[in-house]
Amino acid sequence: MLLVLLTSMVSGCGKKEVSFSEIRIDQATRDVKSFIETSVTTEDSNGIHILGNASDTRYLYLDQDFLESGKGFGSLDIKTDDNSWNIYLTEEDEVMKPAENYRLYKITLDKEYEYMRVFKNGEETYFQSVGG
Image 1 (cartoon, one colour):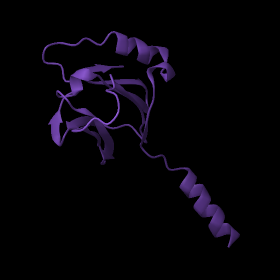
Image 2 (cartoon, rainbow, N blue to C red):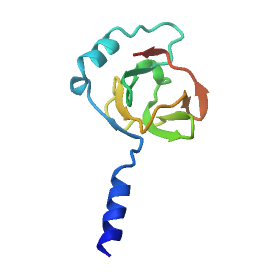
Image 3 (spheres, rainbow, N blue to C red):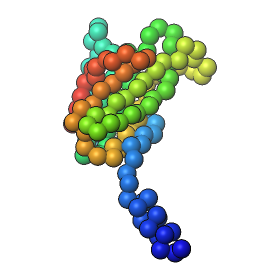
Image 4 (cartoon, rainbow, N blue to C red):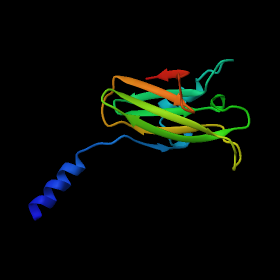
């Protein structure tokens, strides 16, 4: 019985999973802060920026250009398959709290992926800027 318990604990502890958490800019590294400060907005900006500063860590930065007029930041979901990881973003129709200027997420990947895609409200879109 003890052997089965130890085996399941060891095999369960070794598996990495994709995870993400929302963080404040003041919690970010100096490289992330610099990337955000130098992000340029243009007339056709979509406000979706991604920075990878380690093999398994990415930072997703959404600025005001991500939002359509009168909408707020919605949810984030990440799905993976064998060779790609996909980010799914939404907007909220009703803004309950004071308007936010940005969202910053720290994403930890479980492995290296060949492809990275981003979707906004169910439609594939692009990253305005990619840093590394």
